[in-house]
Amino acid sequence: MSMILAYFDPGSGSLLLQAIVGGAAGLFVLVKYLWDLAPSLVIGRKAEPSHGRAKAGV
Amino acid sequence: MAGRRPAFEPMPTAVSFESGSYRDRDGRVFRGPGGEIYRALSARALIEWDAVSATGFFQQAMARGAIVGSEQVDAAPAEFGLDSSWAGILKHEEIPFVSYPYEWTFGMLKDAALAHLELLKRALEEDLTIKDGTAYNMQWVGTRPVFIDVASFERLKSGRPWDGYRQFCQTFLYPLILQAHKNVDFHALLRGRLEGISPSDCARLISMRDLFRPGVFTHVWLHSRLEGSRIVRESGPQQGLERAGFDKTLIERNVANLARTIRRLSWSPAHSPWSAYAGCVPYSADDQRRKASFVAEVVFSRRWDLVWDLGCNTGEYSRIASENARYVVAMDSDHLAVERLYQSLQAQGKEARPVEDQSPGGRRLNGQSPDRPTPGERSPAAERRRTAGAIVPLVVNIADPSPNLGWRGHERGSLTARGLPDLTLCLALVHHLVIGAGIPLRDLLEWLAELGTNLVIEFITKDDPMVRQLLKNRKDSSPDYELDLFEGWLSRFFVVNRSERLASGTRTLYYAMSRSPK
Image (cartoon, rainbow over all chains, first blue to last red; front, side, top):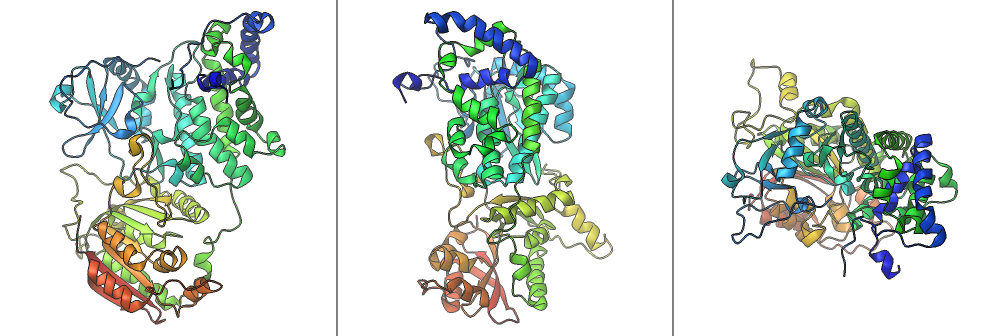
Protein backbone atom coordinates (compact mmCIF):
# COMPACT_ATOMS: atom_id res chain seq x y z
CA MET A 1 0.00 0.00 0.00
CA SER A 2 1.37 3.39 -0.93
CA MET A 3 1.95 6.03 1.70
CA ILE A 4 -0.95 8.15 0.44
CA LEU A 5 -3.41 5.25 0.76
CA ALA A 6 -2.46 4.86 4.40
CA TYR A 7 -3.90 8.34 4.96
CA PHE A 8 -6.99 7.68 2.92
CA ASP A 9 -10.26 6.67 4.57
CA PRO A 10 -11.38 3.41 2.95
CA GLY A 11 -14.95 4.19 3.98
CA SER A 12 -15.17 6.92 1.33
CA GLY A 13 -15.68 4.31 -1.38
CA SER A 14 -18.48 2.78 0.66
CA LEU A 15 -20.34 6.09 0.58
CA LEU A 16 -20.13 6.27 -3.21
CA LEU A 17 -21.33 2.70 -3.59
CA GLN A 18 -24.58 3.60 -1.88
CA ALA A 19 -25.49 5.72 -4.89
CA ILE A 20 -24.58 2.88 -7.25
CA VAL A 21 -26.98 0.41 -5.62
CA GLY A 22 -29.76 3.00 -5.57
CA GLY A 23 -31.28 2.11 -8.94
CA ALA A 24 -32.33 4.82 -11.41
CA ALA A 25 -32.38 7.56 -8.79
CA GLY A 26 -28.94 6.51 -7.69
CA LEU A 27 -27.70 6.53 -11.26
CA PHE A 28 -28.86 10.13 -11.63
CA VAL A 29 -27.01 11.12 -8.46
CA LEU A 30 -23.92 9.23 -9.60
CA VAL A 31 -23.88 10.89 -13.03
CA LYS A 32 -24.23 14.31 -11.46
CA TYR A 33 -21.50 13.46 -8.96
CA LEU A 34 -19.11 12.35 -11.74
CA TRP A 35 -20.03 15.36 -13.90
CA ASP A 36 -19.05 17.67 -11.04
CA LEU A 37 -15.86 15.70 -10.67
CA ALA A 38 -15.01 15.59 -14.39
CA PRO A 39 -12.78 18.69 -14.53
CA SER A 40 -10.41 17.39 -11.89
CA LEU A 41 -10.33 13.94 -13.47
CA VAL A 42 -9.75 15.14 -17.05
CA ILE A 43 -7.55 18.17 -16.51
CA GLY A 44 -5.82 16.75 -13.49
CA ARG A 45 -6.76 19.80 -11.41
CA LYS A 46 -6.32 19.01 -7.79
CA ALA A 47 -9.67 18.64 -6.10
CA GLU A 48 -10.41 20.20 -2.76
CA PRO A 49 -9.14 18.04 0.07
CA SER A 50 -11.55 15.47 1.34
CA HIS A 51 -13.14 16.00 4.70
CA GLY A 52 -13.50 12.26 5.17
CA ARG A 53 -12.30 10.65 8.34
CA ALA A 54 -8.56 10.20 8.25
CA LYS A 55 -7.01 6.99 9.39
CA ALA A 56 -4.97 7.33 12.50
CA GLY A 57 -1.23 7.44 11.88
CA VAL A 58 1.67 9.79 11.50
CA MET B 1 -18.64 13.64 12.77
CA ALA B 2 -16.40 15.29 15.29
CA GLY B 3 -17.22 14.23 18.84
CA ARG B 4 -17.50 16.58 21.73
CA ARG B 5 -14.23 18.11 22.85
CA PRO B 6 -13.36 16.67 26.24
CA ALA B 7 -12.49 19.05 29.02
CA PHE B 8 -9.23 18.67 30.85
CA GLU B 9 -10.07 16.84 34.03
CA PRO B 10 -7.76 17.62 36.93
CA MET B 11 -9.66 15.06 39.02
CA PRO B 12 -10.11 11.58 37.62
CA THR B 13 -13.69 10.45 37.12
CA ALA B 14 -14.93 7.99 39.72
CA VAL B 15 -16.61 5.88 37.03
CA SER B 16 -14.89 3.14 35.11
CA PHE B 17 -16.34 3.01 31.61
CA GLU B 18 -16.83 -0.29 29.82
CA SER B 19 -13.79 -0.78 27.61
CA GLY B 20 -15.87 -1.76 24.59
CA SER B 21 -17.68 1.59 24.37
CA TYR B 22 -14.69 3.87 23.83
CA ARG B 23 -15.43 4.70 20.20
CA ASP B 24 -18.50 6.83 20.88
CA ARG B 25 -17.27 9.87 22.78
CA ASP B 26 -20.89 10.99 23.20
CA GLY B 27 -22.15 7.88 24.96
CA ARG B 28 -20.09 5.72 27.30
CA VAL B 29 -21.37 2.64 29.10
CA PHE B 30 -20.57 1.96 32.74
CA ARG B 31 -21.79 -0.22 35.59
CA GLY B 32 -23.47 1.08 38.70
CA PRO B 33 -22.54 0.00 42.21
CA GLY B 34 -24.96 -2.93 42.01
CA GLY B 35 -23.81 -4.00 38.56
CA GLU B 36 -26.59 -2.14 36.73
CA ILE B 37 -25.87 -1.00 33.18
CA TYR B 38 -25.84 2.74 32.59
CA ARG B 39 -24.89 4.95 29.66
CA ALA B 40 -23.58 8.48 30.12
CA LEU B 41 -24.69 10.88 27.38
CA SER B 42 -23.07 14.11 26.26
CA ALA B 43 -25.26 17.17 25.74
CA ARG B 44 -25.33 16.44 21.99
CA ALA B 45 -26.29 12.80 22.51
CA LEU B 46 -28.94 13.80 25.04
CA ILE B 47 -30.62 16.01 22.43
CA GLU B 48 -30.62 13.07 20.01
CA TRP B 49 -31.99 10.73 22.71
CA ASP B 50 -34.84 13.14 23.45
CA ALA B 51 -35.73 13.25 19.74
CA VAL B 52 -35.33 9.53 19.09
CA SER B 53 -37.00 8.18 22.24
CA ALA B 54 -40.11 10.28 21.56
CA THR B 55 -40.80 8.55 18.25
CA GLY B 56 -43.37 5.80 17.84
CA PHE B 57 -40.82 3.63 16.06
CA PHE B 58 -38.43 3.61 19.01
CA GLN B 59 -41.09 2.95 21.63
CA GLN B 60 -42.61 0.11 19.61
CA ALA B 61 -39.24 -1.49 18.87
CA MET B 62 -38.31 -1.32 22.55
CA ALA B 63 -41.69 -2.75 23.59
CA ARG B 64 -41.27 -5.79 21.36
CA GLY B 65 -37.70 -6.33 22.57
CA ALA B 66 -35.92 -5.43 19.33
CA ILE B 67 -34.09 -2.61 21.14
CA VAL B 68 -32.69 -3.10 24.63
CA GLY B 69 -34.93 -1.68 27.37
CA SER B 70 -33.67 1.83 28.15
CA GLU B 71 -34.90 4.70 30.25
CA GLN B 72 -33.49 8.02 31.32
CA VAL B 73 -32.81 8.27 35.03
CA ASP B 74 -33.51 11.39 37.03
CA ALA B 75 -30.19 11.41 38.84
CA ALA B 76 -27.58 13.95 37.77
CA PRO B 77 -24.35 12.61 36.25
CA ALA B 78 -22.43 13.97 39.24
CA GLU B 79 -24.31 11.56 41.50
CA PHE B 80 -22.60 8.72 39.63
CA GLY B 81 -19.22 10.36 39.99
CA LEU B 82 -19.20 11.65 36.42
CA ASP B 83 -17.67 15.02 35.55
CA SER B 84 -19.67 17.98 34.30
CA SER B 85 -19.05 17.22 30.63
CA TRP B 86 -21.82 14.59 30.78
CA ALA B 87 -25.42 15.77 30.50
CA GLY B 88 -27.63 12.74 31.11
CA ILE B 89 -27.78 9.09 32.14
CA LEU B 90 -29.69 6.15 30.67
CA LYS B 91 -30.30 2.86 32.43
CA HIS B 92 -30.36 -0.27 30.28
CA GLU B 93 -31.90 -3.68 30.71
CA GLU B 94 -29.09 -6.19 31.29
CA ILE B 95 -28.22 -8.78 28.66
CA PRO B 96 -28.11 -12.17 30.47
CA PHE B 97 -24.85 -13.25 28.81
CA VAL B 98 -22.91 -11.12 26.36
CA SER B 99 -21.80 -12.90 23.19
CA TYR B 100 -19.96 -11.83 20.06
CA PRO B 101 -20.48 -12.44 16.34
CA TYR B 102 -17.49 -14.80 16.23
CA GLU B 103 -19.46 -17.09 18.56
CA TRP B 104 -22.73 -17.03 16.63
CA THR B 105 -23.97 -19.48 14.05
CA PHE B 106 -24.71 -18.59 10.45
CA GLY B 107 -28.43 -18.42 11.24
CA MET B 108 -27.82 -16.18 14.24
CA LEU B 109 -25.64 -13.78 12.25
CA LYS B 110 -28.22 -13.75 9.47
CA ASP B 111 -31.15 -13.11 11.82
CA ALA B 112 -29.19 -10.41 13.65
CA ALA B 113 -28.37 -8.75 10.30
CA LEU B 114 -32.01 -8.78 9.22
CA ALA B 115 -33.13 -7.45 12.61
CA HIS B 116 -30.61 -4.62 12.28
CA LEU B 117 -31.80 -3.76 8.77
CA GLU B 118 -35.44 -3.86 9.87
CA LEU B 119 -34.67 -1.36 12.63
CA LEU B 120 -32.88 0.91 10.17
CA LYS B 121 -35.77 0.67 7.73
CA ARG B 122 -38.31 1.62 10.43
CA ALA B 123 -36.05 4.37 11.71
CA LEU B 124 -35.72 5.89 8.24
CA GLU B 125 -39.50 6.07 7.98
CA GLU B 126 -39.39 8.51 10.89
CA ASP B 127 -36.35 10.39 9.55
CA LEU B 128 -33.95 8.70 11.94
CA THR B 129 -30.83 6.71 11.13
CA ILE B 130 -28.35 4.40 12.85
CA LYS B 131 -24.90 5.89 12.64
CA ASP B 132 -23.16 2.50 12.98
CA GLY B 133 -23.66 -0.82 11.26
CA THR B 134 -21.53 -3.18 13.31
CA ALA B 135 -22.69 -6.63 14.38
CA TYR B 136 -21.28 -5.89 17.83
CA ASN B 137 -24.28 -3.63 18.43
CA MET B 138 -26.48 -6.73 18.47
CA GLN B 139 -26.85 -9.11 21.39
CA TRP B 140 -29.04 -12.11 22.19
CA VAL B 141 -31.65 -12.79 24.82
CA GLY B 142 -32.18 -16.47 24.23
CA THR B 143 -32.71 -16.68 20.49
CA ARG B 144 -34.08 -13.13 20.16
CA PRO B 145 -31.67 -10.57 18.65
CA VAL B 146 -31.56 -7.26 20.51
CA PHE B 147 -30.01 -3.97 19.39
CA ILE B 148 -28.09 -2.53 22.34
CA ASP B 149 -26.41 0.69 21.22
CA VAL B 150 -29.30 3.12 21.59
CA ALA B 151 -26.91 6.08 21.27
CA SER B 152 -26.40 5.02 17.64
CA PHE B 153 -29.85 6.30 16.74
CA GLU B 154 -29.89 9.90 15.62
CA ARG B 155 -31.88 12.22 13.41
CA LEU B 156 -31.14 11.78 9.73
CA LYS B 157 -29.18 14.57 8.11
CA SER B 158 -30.25 15.45 4.61
CA GLY B 159 -27.92 14.31 1.85
CA ARG B 160 -25.87 12.01 4.06
CA PRO B 161 -25.36 8.34 3.09
CA TRP B 162 -25.53 5.62 5.76
CA ASP B 163 -22.24 5.83 7.66
CA GLY B 164 -22.65 2.28 8.96
CA TYR B 165 -22.83 0.61 5.54
CA ARG B 166 -19.19 -0.43 5.42
CA GLN B 167 -19.28 -1.78 8.97
CA PHE B 168 -22.42 -3.69 8.10
CA CYS B 169 -20.74 -5.31 5.10
CA GLN B 170 -17.60 -6.17 7.06
CA THR B 171 -19.25 -7.69 10.12
CA PHE B 172 -22.50 -9.06 8.71
CA LEU B 173 -22.69 -9.40 4.94
CA TYR B 174 -19.21 -10.67 4.04
CA PRO B 175 -19.07 -13.34 6.77
CA LEU B 176 -22.49 -14.56 5.64
CA ILE B 177 -21.48 -14.57 1.97
CA LEU B 178 -18.28 -16.50 2.64
CA GLN B 179 -20.13 -19.05 4.76
CA ALA B 180 -23.00 -19.45 2.30
CA HIS B 181 -21.07 -19.48 -0.99
CA LYS B 182 -17.66 -20.82 0.02
CA ASN B 183 -18.50 -22.80 3.19
CA VAL B 184 -15.71 -20.93 4.97
CA ASP B 185 -16.36 -20.63 8.70
CA PHE B 186 -16.42 -16.93 9.48
CA HIS B 187 -15.58 -17.28 13.18
CA ALA B 188 -11.80 -17.24 12.82
CA LEU B 189 -12.00 -14.30 10.40
CA LEU B 190 -14.17 -12.20 12.73
CA ARG B 191 -12.17 -13.18 15.80
CA GLY B 192 -8.96 -12.31 13.95
CA ARG B 193 -10.04 -8.76 13.19
CA LEU B 194 -12.78 -7.03 15.16
CA GLU B 195 -13.46 -4.62 12.28
CA GLY B 196 -14.51 -7.63 10.23
CA ILE B 197 -13.62 -8.75 6.72
CA SER B 198 -12.57 -5.93 4.39
CA PRO B 199 -14.16 -5.64 0.93
CA SER B 200 -10.83 -6.38 -0.74
CA ASP B 201 -10.21 -9.50 1.38
CA CYS B 202 -13.70 -10.76 0.68
CA ALA B 203 -13.27 -10.08 -3.06
CA ARG B 204 -10.05 -12.12 -3.10
CA LEU B 205 -11.84 -15.08 -1.52
CA ILE B 206 -14.74 -15.26 -3.96
CA SER B 207 -14.61 -16.81 -7.42
CA MET B 208 -15.73 -15.49 -10.80
CA ARG B 209 -18.87 -17.61 -10.56
CA ASP B 210 -19.81 -15.94 -7.28
CA LEU B 211 -19.97 -12.56 -9.02
CA PHE B 212 -23.24 -13.68 -10.59
CA ARG B 213 -24.81 -14.42 -7.22
CA PRO B 214 -27.15 -11.79 -5.75
CA GLY B 215 -25.38 -8.80 -4.25
CA VAL B 216 -21.84 -10.09 -4.70
CA PHE B 217 -20.90 -7.99 -7.72
CA THR B 218 -21.90 -4.68 -6.11
CA HIS B 219 -21.49 -5.15 -2.37
CA VAL B 220 -18.24 -7.12 -2.67
CA TRP B 221 -16.41 -6.69 -5.98
CA LEU B 222 -17.36 -3.11 -6.80
CA HIS B 223 -16.99 -2.16 -3.15
CA SER B 224 -13.42 -3.47 -3.16
CA ARG B 225 -12.62 -1.68 -6.43
CA LEU B 226 -13.80 1.63 -5.01
CA GLU B 227 -11.48 1.33 -2.02
CA GLY B 228 -8.72 3.77 -2.75
CA SER B 229 -9.83 4.31 -6.34
CA ARG B 230 -8.76 7.56 -7.99
CA ILE B 231 -12.34 8.80 -8.32
CA VAL B 232 -12.90 8.47 -4.62
CA ARG B 233 -9.43 9.74 -3.66
CA GLU B 234 -9.73 12.89 -5.74
CA SER B 235 -13.05 13.91 -4.33
CA GLY B 236 -14.89 14.06 -1.08
CA PRO B 237 -17.79 11.69 -1.68
CA GLN B 238 -19.55 12.96 1.42
CA GLN B 239 -19.83 16.51 0.14
CA GLY B 240 -20.00 15.54 -3.52
CA LEU B 241 -22.94 13.18 -3.04
CA GLU B 242 -24.84 15.74 -1.02
CA ARG B 243 -24.38 18.30 -3.81
CA ALA B 244 -25.45 15.70 -6.37
CA GLY B 245 -28.78 15.18 -4.60
CA PHE B 246 -28.24 12.05 -2.47
CA ASP B 247 -31.32 11.54 -0.32
CA LYS B 248 -33.07 9.12 2.04
CA THR B 249 -34.61 7.13 -0.80
CA LEU B 250 -31.18 5.83 -1.77
CA ILE B 251 -30.47 4.60 1.76
CA GLU B 252 -33.86 2.87 1.81
CA ARG B 253 -33.06 1.15 -1.49
CA ASN B 254 -29.68 0.05 -0.20
CA VAL B 255 -31.27 -1.34 2.96
CA ALA B 256 -33.89 -3.19 0.92
CA ASN B 257 -31.18 -4.53 -1.38
CA LEU B 258 -29.08 -5.74 1.54
CA ALA B 259 -32.08 -7.41 3.20
CA ARG B 260 -33.02 -9.14 -0.07
CA THR B 261 -29.43 -10.34 -0.55
CA ILE B 262 -29.15 -11.67 2.99
CA ARG B 263 -32.55 -13.40 2.98
CA ARG B 264 -31.43 -15.42 -0.06
CA LEU B 265 -28.24 -16.61 1.61
CA SER B 266 -28.39 -20.09 3.06
CA TRP B 267 -25.91 -22.50 4.57
CA SER B 268 -26.93 -26.10 4.90
CA PRO B 269 -24.07 -28.58 4.67
CA ALA B 270 -25.28 -32.14 4.82
CA HIS B 271 -23.16 -33.10 7.80
CA SER B 272 -20.30 -32.19 10.07
CA PRO B 273 -18.18 -34.27 12.44
CA TRP B 274 -20.80 -33.88 15.18
CA SER B 275 -24.10 -33.14 13.53
CA ALA B 276 -25.16 -36.80 13.50
CA TYR B 277 -23.86 -37.61 16.97
CA ALA B 278 -27.27 -38.09 18.54
CA GLY B 279 -28.24 -40.59 15.89
CA CYS B 280 -25.18 -42.82 16.31
CA VAL B 281 -24.34 -42.59 19.99
CA PRO B 282 -23.97 -46.11 21.34
CA TYR B 283 -26.04 -45.57 24.46
CA SER B 284 -28.57 -48.05 25.56
CA ALA B 285 -31.99 -46.52 26.03
CA ASP B 286 -31.64 -47.19 29.75
CA ASP B 287 -28.29 -45.36 29.93
CA GLN B 288 -29.83 -42.41 28.11
CA ARG B 289 -32.72 -42.29 30.56
CA ARG B 290 -30.44 -42.56 33.59
CA LYS B 291 -28.17 -39.82 32.29
CA ALA B 292 -31.09 -37.46 31.65
CA SER B 293 -32.51 -38.33 35.03
CA PHE B 294 -29.17 -37.66 36.79
CA VAL B 295 -28.95 -34.23 35.16
CA ALA B 296 -32.58 -33.44 35.97
CA GLU B 297 -32.10 -34.37 39.62
CA VAL B 298 -29.23 -31.89 39.89
CA VAL B 299 -31.10 -29.23 37.94
CA PHE B 300 -34.10 -29.46 40.26
CA SER B 301 -32.07 -29.68 43.47
CA ARG B 302 -32.08 -25.88 43.61
CA ARG B 303 -32.65 -22.83 41.44
CA TRP B 304 -29.76 -21.95 39.07
CA ASP B 305 -28.87 -18.52 37.76
CA LEU B 306 -26.47 -19.23 34.89
CA VAL B 307 -25.81 -22.69 33.46
CA TRP B 308 -23.11 -23.54 30.94
CA ASP B 309 -23.57 -26.68 28.86
CA LEU B 310 -20.11 -27.44 27.43
CA GLY B 311 -20.17 -29.64 24.34
CA CYS B 312 -23.94 -29.24 24.12
CA ASN B 313 -24.37 -30.85 20.66
CA THR B 314 -28.15 -31.22 20.20
CA GLY B 315 -28.84 -29.31 23.41
CA GLU B 316 -30.74 -32.15 25.09
CA TYR B 317 -29.26 -31.36 28.51
CA SER B 318 -29.41 -27.59 27.94
CA ARG B 319 -33.16 -27.97 27.60
CA ILE B 320 -33.37 -29.88 30.87
CA ALA B 321 -31.24 -27.22 32.59
CA SER B 322 -33.38 -24.41 31.17
CA GLU B 323 -36.36 -25.75 33.05
CA ASN B 324 -34.95 -24.53 36.33
CA ALA B 325 -32.38 -21.88 35.42
CA ARG B 326 -32.62 -18.21 34.61
CA TYR B 327 -30.32 -18.58 31.59
CA VAL B 328 -28.44 -21.34 29.81
CA VAL B 329 -25.43 -20.85 27.54
CA ALA B 330 -25.15 -23.91 25.28
CA MET B 331 -21.67 -24.19 23.76
CA ASP B 332 -20.17 -26.51 21.21
CA SER B 333 -17.28 -26.20 18.78
CA ASP B 334 -19.27 -27.79 15.94
CA HIS B 335 -20.87 -25.00 13.94
CA LEU B 336 -23.50 -27.15 12.27
CA ALA B 337 -24.58 -28.82 15.52
CA VAL B 338 -25.06 -25.41 17.17
CA GLU B 339 -26.83 -24.06 14.09
CA ARG B 340 -29.30 -26.95 14.27
CA LEU B 341 -29.85 -26.27 17.96
CA TYR B 342 -30.49 -22.59 17.21
CA GLN B 343 -32.96 -23.41 14.44
CA SER B 344 -34.71 -25.92 16.65
CA LEU B 345 -35.00 -23.41 19.52
CA GLN B 346 -36.28 -20.81 17.10
CA ALA B 347 -38.88 -23.24 15.84
CA GLN B 348 -40.03 -23.96 19.35
CA GLY B 349 -40.44 -20.27 20.09
CA LYS B 350 -38.25 -20.70 23.12
CA GLU B 351 -36.96 -17.20 22.56
CA ALA B 352 -40.38 -15.73 23.22
CA ARG B 353 -40.08 -16.66 26.86
CA PRO B 354 -38.91 -13.60 28.75
CA VAL B 355 -35.95 -13.84 31.03
CA GLU B 356 -37.22 -13.76 34.54
CA ASP B 357 -37.81 -10.61 36.47
CA GLN B 358 -34.50 -9.56 37.94
CA SER B 359 -35.85 -6.72 40.04
CA PRO B 360 -35.40 -6.84 43.80
CA GLY B 361 -39.09 -7.62 44.15
CA GLY B 362 -38.91 -10.31 41.53
CA ARG B 363 -38.23 -13.98 41.94
CA ARG B 364 -35.11 -14.89 43.88
CA LEU B 365 -32.39 -15.93 41.54
CA ASN B 366 -29.48 -16.63 43.82
CA GLY B 367 -30.20 -20.27 44.00
CA GLN B 368 -30.95 -20.25 47.72
CA SER B 369 -34.61 -21.07 47.38
CA PRO B 370 -35.54 -24.69 46.80
CA ASP B 371 -37.44 -24.74 43.59
CA ARG B 372 -39.26 -27.98 43.39
CA PRO B 373 -42.97 -27.17 43.24
CA THR B 374 -44.83 -28.34 46.27
CA PRO B 375 -47.61 -30.82 45.58
CA GLY B 376 -50.87 -29.13 44.95
CA GLU B 377 -49.31 -25.72 44.34
CA ARG B 378 -49.12 -26.18 40.56
CA SER B 379 -48.66 -29.03 38.20
CA PRO B 380 -44.96 -29.79 37.61
CA ALA B 381 -45.32 -29.07 33.91
CA ALA B 382 -46.91 -25.68 34.56
CA GLU B 383 -44.28 -24.85 37.12
CA ARG B 384 -41.50 -25.77 34.72
CA ARG B 385 -42.96 -23.57 32.01
CA ARG B 386 -43.26 -20.71 34.46
CA THR B 387 -39.67 -20.90 35.69
CA ALA B 388 -37.96 -21.90 32.45
CA GLY B 389 -35.18 -19.68 31.23
CA ALA B 390 -33.89 -18.99 27.78
CA ILE B 391 -31.06 -20.83 26.02
CA VAL B 392 -28.47 -19.05 23.89
CA PRO B 393 -26.47 -21.41 21.66
CA LEU B 394 -22.88 -20.39 20.91
CA VAL B 395 -20.06 -21.79 18.77
CA VAL B 396 -17.26 -22.09 21.34
CA ASN B 397 -14.34 -24.47 21.43
CA ILE B 398 -13.49 -25.07 25.08
CA ALA B 399 -9.94 -26.00 24.06
CA ASP B 400 -9.64 -22.54 22.48
CA PRO B 401 -12.28 -20.29 24.06
CA SER B 402 -12.74 -16.65 23.04
CA PRO B 403 -9.93 -14.53 24.50
CA ASN B 404 -9.82 -10.86 25.47
CA LEU B 405 -9.55 -8.89 22.23
CA GLY B 406 -9.26 -5.38 20.85
CA TRP B 407 -8.01 -2.13 22.31
CA ARG B 408 -5.89 -2.71 25.40
CA GLY B 409 -6.99 -6.34 25.22
CA HIS B 410 -10.31 -5.46 26.87
CA GLU B 411 -12.60 -4.29 24.11
CA ARG B 412 -14.23 -7.71 23.85
CA GLY B 413 -14.10 -9.87 26.95
CA SER B 414 -12.94 -13.44 27.17
CA LEU B 415 -15.53 -16.14 27.73
CA THR B 416 -14.90 -16.25 31.46
CA ALA B 417 -14.83 -12.45 31.82
CA ARG B 418 -18.48 -12.20 30.80
CA GLY B 419 -20.07 -14.06 33.66
CA LEU B 420 -19.37 -17.34 35.42
CA PRO B 421 -21.84 -20.20 35.71
CA ASP B 422 -23.15 -21.59 38.96
CA LEU B 423 -23.77 -24.92 37.23
CA THR B 424 -21.70 -26.44 34.43
CA LEU B 425 -22.62 -29.51 32.44
CA CYS B 426 -19.62 -31.32 31.03
CA LEU B 427 -21.08 -34.46 29.50
CA ALA B 428 -19.26 -36.74 27.07
CA LEU B 429 -16.61 -34.06 26.65
CA VAL B 430 -13.62 -34.88 28.86
CA HIS B 431 -12.17 -37.52 26.49
CA HIS B 432 -12.29 -35.06 23.57
CA LEU B 433 -10.45 -32.38 25.53
CA VAL B 434 -7.88 -34.72 27.12
CA ILE B 435 -7.28 -37.27 24.36
CA GLY B 436 -8.42 -35.23 21.35
CA ALA B 437 -7.09 -31.78 22.23
CA GLY B 438 -4.24 -32.94 24.49
CA ILE B 439 -5.28 -30.93 27.54
CA PRO B 440 -3.89 -32.48 30.74
CA LEU B 441 -6.70 -33.93 32.83
CA ARG B 442 -5.54 -32.08 35.92
CA ASP B 443 -5.54 -28.74 34.05
CA LEU B 444 -9.07 -29.30 32.81
CA LEU B 445 -10.44 -30.00 36.27
CA GLU B 446 -8.48 -27.10 37.73
CA TRP B 447 -9.94 -24.75 35.10
CA LEU B 448 -13.46 -25.96 35.83
CA ALA B 449 -12.87 -25.46 39.55
CA GLU B 450 -11.62 -21.92 38.92
CA LEU B 451 -15.03 -21.12 37.47
CA GLY B 452 -16.34 -21.61 41.01
CA THR B 453 -19.12 -23.71 39.58
CA ASN B 454 -21.10 -26.74 40.56
CA LEU B 455 -20.38 -29.45 38.06
CA VAL B 456 -22.06 -32.37 36.40
CA ILE B 457 -19.30 -34.26 34.64
CA GLU B 458 -19.12 -37.56 32.81
CA PHE B 459 -16.03 -39.72 32.60
CA ILE B 460 -15.86 -42.37 29.90
CA THR B 461 -13.18 -45.02 30.22
CA LYS B 462 -10.87 -46.13 27.43
CA ASP B 463 -12.91 -49.33 27.08
CA ASP B 464 -15.88 -47.40 25.74
CA PRO B 465 -16.50 -47.81 21.98
CA MET B 466 -16.50 -44.03 21.45
CA VAL B 467 -13.14 -43.56 23.21
CA ARG B 468 -11.71 -46.56 21.35
CA GLN B 469 -12.81 -44.86 18.13
CA LEU B 470 -11.09 -41.66 19.24
CA LEU B 471 -7.86 -43.53 19.94
CA LYS B 472 -7.95 -45.42 16.65
CA ASN B 473 -5.06 -44.38 14.39
CA ARG B 474 -3.83 -42.08 17.13
CA LYS B 475 -0.93 -42.52 19.52
CA ASP B 476 -2.30 -42.62 23.04
CA SER B 477 -0.39 -39.74 24.60
CA SER B 478 -2.77 -39.26 27.50
CA PRO B 479 -1.54 -41.59 30.26
CA ASP B 480 -3.40 -39.37 32.72
CA TYR B 481 -6.74 -40.34 31.19
CA GLU B 482 -7.65 -43.00 33.73
CA LEU B 483 -10.67 -43.28 36.00
CA ASP B 484 -8.73 -43.41 39.28
CA LEU B 485 -6.66 -40.35 38.33
CA PHE B 486 -9.80 -38.53 37.25
CA GLU B 487 -11.50 -39.24 40.56
CA GLY B 488 -8.38 -38.19 42.43
CA TRP B 489 -8.15 -34.84 40.67
CA LEU B 490 -11.89 -34.31 40.88
CA SER B 491 -11.76 -34.77 44.65
CA ARG B 492 -8.79 -32.44 44.85
CA PHE B 493 -10.65 -29.53 43.25
CA PHE B 494 -14.27 -30.37 44.03
CA VAL B 495 -16.39 -31.88 46.74
CA VAL B 496 -18.05 -34.83 45.08
CA ASN B 497 -21.69 -34.93 46.10
CA ARG B 498 -22.61 -38.15 44.36
CA SER B 499 -21.80 -40.33 41.40
CA GLU B 500 -23.48 -42.99 39.33
CA ARG B 501 -22.01 -45.57 37.00
CA LEU B 502 -24.26 -46.22 34.02
CA ALA B 503 -25.22 -49.77 33.14
CA SER B 504 -22.73 -49.85 30.27
CA GLY B 505 -19.97 -49.85 32.87
CA THR B 506 -17.79 -47.46 30.89
CA ARG B 507 -19.54 -44.19 31.76
CA THR B 508 -19.73 -42.59 35.20
CA LEU B 509 -21.56 -39.40 36.12
CA TYR B 510 -20.52 -37.13 38.97
CA TYR B 511 -22.15 -34.19 40.67
CA ALA B 512 -19.54 -32.07 42.41
CA MET B 513 -19.18 -28.65 43.99
CA SER B 514 -16.11 -26.48 43.57
CA ARG B 515 -13.91 -26.08 46.63
CA SER B 516 -13.44 -22.42 45.65
CA PRO B 517 -16.98 -21.18 44.92
CA LYS B 518 -17.29 -17.81 43.16
